[in-house]
Image (cartoon, rainbow, N blue to C red):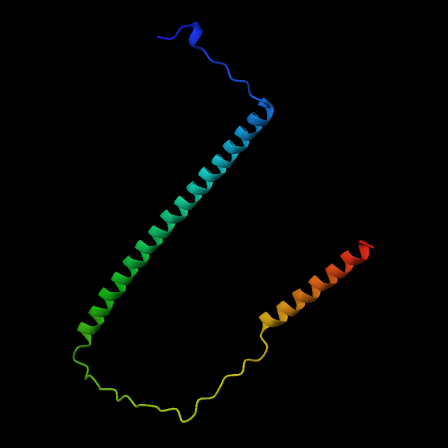
Length: 122
């Protein structure tokens, strides 16, 4: 059983900063919970989409089996597979792609911005 003598008081050096840190931590926790709920919704939608795709694939397989049964009287032809040999291996030369052009453009813009910053710092 506690009495008045058992009470201990602790001084908080900066109560405003402590409250501010506590509120910021609470805001971060709420943001994490919102993100978790959003990801949970995405997971549920993904699961439903996969189930829908599986259902469609099963229906397609059933329809394909029906078609095979209907046309079972058709003569099966064997397809001859020919082996193709390559005489020479050519090295592929890639022309400049849009990516490299984009990177060059971005590098030029970055250099222009850096030049402007250097002029401003004079």
